[in-house]
Image (cartoon, rainbow over all chains, first blue to last red; front, side, top):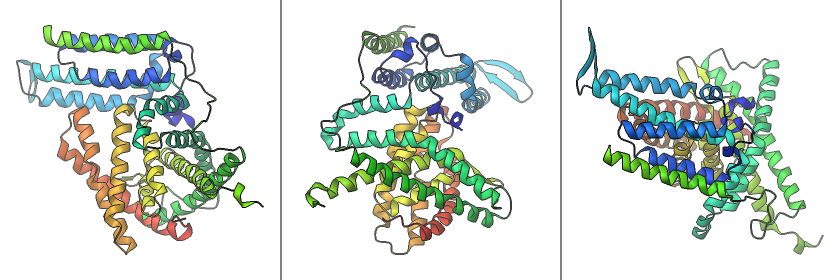
Length: 267
Length: 169
């Protein structure tokens, strides 16, 4: 069941990328999205591609894992690639056969957009594959801390997210069990008239909601008993530590941004 | 029992936190396990019906937004989907609550919510047109139509569901 969840597709490991602080990785990925849009010519896109390959190598994740999880996206990417090739009508004609004409500009645009997308998707996927969901939540909580000044309940939101993440697999199993139980009683979700099928969803959702609410009540009681009193003054079980490697990772993205700006102007 | 030891406000807020978290988890579970219940040519996302929950209790504004945020993490382009999807859902839910506040009839309330959600699909269309250079208006039209269908079927289910479970508590 868990393999459906990319969030749960975290692969434990001990590579350079795995050991990075989640804060550094989050900063890196968000900065990466910005610098990807700086690229506008062959040199810049080539630099981005090399940078991405380096990241994948450093994470020691097998290319198979990356590509396997991204099949639907790769199909969409191929579709846009061909859309650009066949519908952009600028530049010299490279190929002509009956009604198919491929222009130089179309090919260029198609390749550029595909590369932009490929690097974006690979880098973000590397982050989810090398960081556990709970560390991503911890990292986000710390990074969003300044927003507390705007009276945003960052601690509570992060706590809710951690609780959610903890219970998603449980509730997924439960959904599966209830589905099987109702099927055993003769409920049918896959055939019959639409009206009947819509009705068949209700006996599935009622027990799910009831059980989720019951779990929430039990959990609240358990938290109360253990003396949960909100964010102020709470100590942490999982501590985040910033190392030199984290600074290197953040600096590398700054350098990459500078390189891209240079290549954009002078190549 | 000495009542001073029992802090009512903490109790409610802890329950609120856990209930919100569990409904968000349920949203993600339903999104993934019952991803698409297909009715012939019409593909319909069951989880869309959670959007109606926010009409009954403000707790579900956060619950649904959080659910969308976690579910969007599953997308390979999550650094864009998570902030955009999360923020859009949050704002659209707030808008729906504000607009439907004075409407008494429950069915009308749901219909207005469905229409607003379908209209709000320009965020998805915008994202698709920026990332993949797809035509904006055509994408908006198709995504909005899918959303409207999902919300319509979701509304029928929610209507039966709310007779069995009190979501206002």
